[in-house]
Every structure is written in structure tokens, then in C-alpha cells.
Image: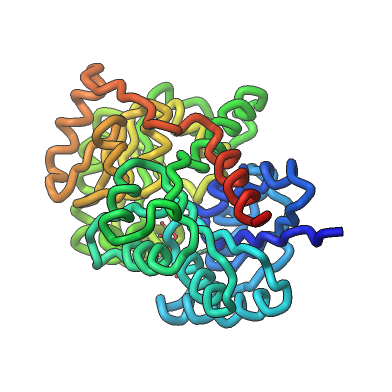
Amino acid sequence: MTRRKKVVFVAGARPNFMKIACLLKECRKYKAIRAIVVHSGQHYDNEMSEQFFKDLDIAPPRYFLGVGSGSHAEQTGRVMVAFEKICQKERPDYVVVVGDVNSTVAACLAAKKCHIRVAHIEAGLRSFDMAMPEEINRMVTDSISDDLFVTEQSGVTHLRKEGHAAKKIHFVGNTMIDSLILAMKKIQRMDPRSWTSYPLQEQLSSYGLLTLHRPSNVDSKTQLKRLLAVVDQVAQEIPIIFPAHPRTRKSIREFKVKLSKNIHLTHPLGYLEFIFLCQKAGFILTDSGGIQEETTFLKVPCFTLRANTERPVTLEKGTNILVGNNIEQIPRLVHQVLRGQSRAGQTPPLWDGRASQRIIKILVRKLMI
Ligand code: UD1
């Protein structure tokens, strides 16, 4: 009897969990595959991690590495040391890493040095901004991975330019959108009143949503104050719900930033609660990568508080607007959106809920060779 093939899925931080959920579901359809989940522990608070496992119906991970927070080198190094042990113990046939966080590059490096094949989900995205740790993580991961699964055409173009063979590159769509489609169905059957944010206990009929966590926006007192002053102006026209990342909350406290009463600061929200809020929001202000894609799919106007994006399809086809340094324009842009002057946008190719199906089919084929 042939041995079942072991595929280890690595996730470590909040934006990873929605990218592996549907891949794991898909694996259950194949008896020849044994999926093992490793959680690096890069994110560890209940609301940044466990809640996502519940919302996405992911079983608790087989291994929890507990690496926690630290400098980039500390975090990356700790994941490498701990994950190498798992690779030696389990001898997986494939390791699957997703996205661009420190756990992604660390697990990829450790696995490759143990001569294990690695598949990178969300390969080829490039912001061309080497000041972003994620850009370094993406480039290193792509350069040594065996299979590169791509969410949008720009990824294929970058990887080809970087010299990767066409047979390694698979344009399959977006596993995050697979999870989003399932979440939307689930939300329809739920009573949103059980959520703490339900638009803030029904006082708000319309609102904007704000998320901020990039070091370039929240670690600098001047930049954070400048951004929140602009958000304050927007909040004079429409209330803003602001689920704050722990890093952001810390800066708000440390820099003694005062928020007006129209900005409703909340703890980080679970996946379903956040998607519910996104769907109903008038617009979103964010510096996240994933939210640019989710809003494009949901056709909700998105203002990205960054100078660049590695997800250009959301600008070309979707509802995303890159604000860059022109943040003083935001109140005017929001005002236009609220008067109905916004692009409806189109759904990017292959963002159809079946990316995970395509990926696992390809992996199974490769595993059987
Ligand atoms: C990480 C990713 C980023 C991703 C983001 C999503 C890297 C380089 N960055 O950034 O790409 O967009 O996750 O959230 O991998 N903290 C807690 N509880 C937690 C986790 C973190 O309190 O569960 C606090 C700690 O003080 C920590 C800080 O948040 O120092 C930052 O966490 P870290 O994992 O270093 O980076 P993120 O900013 O979350």
C-alpha cells in the first residue's frame, strides 16, 4: 500500500488563516493526502488567532510553535529553529506557505534546507518597496519555492521577469476569496446582534471602517497623528468604526492620540464579524493588503493609506484607490463616494471561490509523480 502523502500547512499571523482554510477543506476530499497544520504563534491573542480558527472552521493546529513577538530576526529565527524540528520529525512531502509574513519566509527557508518541496500561495505580488518587510519576505520565498500559486496576472508577469520557469507558475485565483464567499453564506444564517460591533449596538445606520497596522503608518507619532487628524475630519460627516490592531492601540496610547467621539475604537474583530462590517460599510480606509482584495470582491469603495500596492488588479479592476501621501484629499474623496460617485468595479479573473480546488488538484498531481 502506498503511504499517504504528508502536506504541512504553515500559518502564523492573522492574514494567513483565511488563506489556508479552504485548502484544508479541499484536502479532505483526497484520501491520498494527510494535511498537518503548523501554527507558528506569530499572532497569539485570542482575537488575532483562535477566533479565526473558530470562524473559519479550522481544527486546532497539530503543532503550535509559540514564537510570539520580537524583532524581525528574532521572530524569523525562532520560526526557523522550531519548524526545522517539525520537518525532521514529520518528513513532509510538501510544505505549503501562504502570504508574506515573517512566518512564511522562515518556514520556507527551514523546509528547503531540509530538502522538502515548498509551495507558495499568493506568489509574485510585488510592491517594489524594499522598506516593507513583506516585500523582502515575498521575494525570498518566491526565489526558493518549487511551486508558485498566483492570485492575479501581475504575479505571473513578475515571476516570469525574475526568471522563474513557466511550469512552476500556476495562476489559480485567490484562496482568500474562497474563504470570503463561504463567510458570506455563513453570515446570512447568523444573528449579527450577537457581535459586539453590530453597528455599535444599532446606533449607526451608515458608517466607514478604518484599519491601520503598518509600521510606516502607526510607529511614527507624526504620521499616525496626521492620519488620524484626517480621519477625524471624515468622521464629522460619517461615523467611523476602528477595530485597532494591538500595535496600533499601543501607539495610540503611547503617543497620547485623542480620538473624537465619532471614531469608535474597538478591539480586533473576528473574521465573520469583520466581513459583516465590511459588507455593510459605506467605504473602508485601510493600510492592509488583504482588505484591498476583500473590498474589491465585495464592491465596497476602499481607500488605501499607502504609497504603493502589491495588488494592482484591485486598482485596475476593483474598487481600490491608492491615496499615497495625499491624505488631505481623503475627506473630499469620501464625500464623493457618499454621494454615489464611485466605481462599481469588476471581480478579477479566477476570484470565483475555486482557487483552493485548483491548487490542491495541482499539488496532488505533483505528489503522485
Ligand atoms: C504582521 C505581518 C504583516 C501583517 C500583519 C497582520 C510581518 C513582517 N508582518 O504584522 O505583514 O499584515 O501581521 O496583522 O510578518 N501583538 C499582540 N498580539 C498578537 C500579535 C501581535 O499584542 O497576537 C502585538 C505585539 O506587541 C507585537 C506587535 O503586535 O510586537 C506586532 O506584531 P507582529 O507579528 O510583529 O507584526 P504585525 O504588525 O502584526
